[in-house]
Length: 236
Image (cartoon, rainbow, N blue to C red; front, top):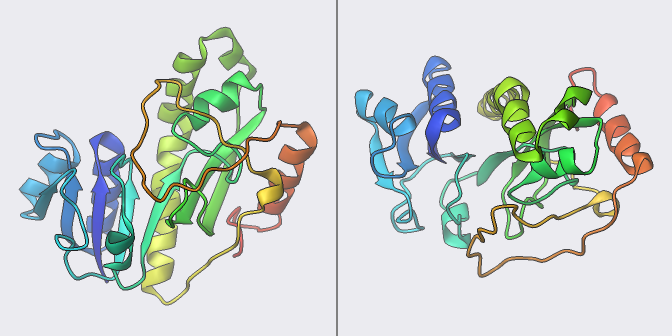
């Protein structure tokens, strides 16, 4: 199976490394110029680099699957349809809860006891695509003693980063073997919070959703749907 990876930094590097170890052919990497993680690893392995911001339907190479790995680039309609099977990406929350850039920090700010990660199929909305796999973890009460931004960094570094690599590994290997999982997100539980940094992603086909209040009952029902699978992957 041939894939393209759009990503950056350490997480992007680990996803590329995972693909190489799994003998998944990576035909190109789209990353910021001078990236010292995924960019450097791509160069060492003679993988074509497409500068971030220039990936499009015209520049995307022929491949089977696109993987978004910590990429803040807009993956437009033509680009999404370039790979034969489309694109999957990783979002550090239990979608549809906490859509948006600052999902971990909002989980902390809202006092969530449980969070997790989701691999989903990219579509025209923000973090709205069908779910391919999910896993969960507890948020240590000690995180409430830190600032939300610092707590988010700790949770990402200690739990959600590795979770994302493992989930993407599972999904990519499943797809390579012919197993494709798609489960619609339940809009009843959807929340969307703004970026804490104030940065906005230019997305001309953005589908805005109405933010709803979080409740323990909602989170419990999401957790129940994840827990139905022995592998903690929705739809498996």
